[in-house]
Length: 528
Image (cartoon, rainbow, N blue to C red; front, side, top):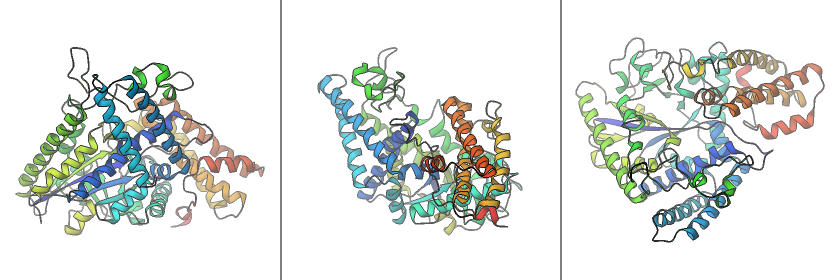
């Protein structure tokens, strides 16, 4: 066995955004950009590693809302239309810029890149989830699930059945989508508090990842800090994020993604070009949108100007950064292993959409990390958390500290005055939902349908994304509108049950829009 291990964990999540009532909806582009810039390039990286016989193992968590959107026929068809729109912009760009102009080379590279996306999309039949499940079946990745709608669990401690519902629905929907029950779960926002572990182990979840201080401040203090997992009193294995591995990627000033050769995210053709050239990426109100075609690197031009992006130079730089990361982990493991009775594990968890979307070279960096680790496998080996526990099952028993990731590390994002008003509505809705389900959850016909749709609306209302988008200013008006819309729909469903006046056409339309968890299980409401 090696001296120690490094575990890359990518958390894939987007809020459930699906608007069939509109031909084109801005926020659906979050999904399209993630597919084109993160998930398809990651699948391409796996193929290159496999072709070159480079061993790799990593963990990929897929939240149920993301899985639902990736599998949805409407959204998959709209993604293909999104790629076609980029094709049309590219055609104009190829005509505008000759091969020997400053931008001609990078535009032609984008044309080849776009053709590669189409090839991968067609090869997997548009089924990203199925493609990832196939890699899991081959033993290369491990798929985790997440809370059913990415609810922040610590805010639901006084509604333990709702935490159970989040876990049960997640496990069952993941199993249905991938053909395999998950053994790991990413806790939404890494939100942990005592009692959450009971809900997870009840439904077969054996391990999770937590923020660094959740492990470092556990009670009693673990012997090895974040270099080894701990077992909660319920038997849940909790791995802690390694601060140094995260710092090399996340740190704003010194992290890898800020290197001058890498692609500049904030400079896009959709904002640079004349309206007539990018009209398909301009909303009805005149708001311009990203096309994904970005011709400049972070810096390196004349003062005040960006240098032209060179993909080949950027990908070469990703090899340098991957080697730096690998050697840092090797040195870290050699140092730790001298003082540990078990093999250390370095947990490096990140948001999946960082790789490719925010950091365009990210998928190449991950690929190059595995290439860099290959000759070091006597010292450090890539692993999944499940495989590590199979080899090293015995660890300290301790209770992790209440924690989250994000600003402050202790749920400040979800307790912020700008969004904390949501909590009282959540509290009332959870209590009312349990009453509805207990009275009508096993009914046949319309009342049973209303009970199940009530579950969907409250679950969607619980998404941690709404408070996050308000706090960060990412999309505050949309986030507030979505929270209020799901609350209003839930209230109307409840009034129909009370009055007996059921608007079946409206109910049917709502079921077709908010169509998560088509076979909603309600066991959590009636069990012990």
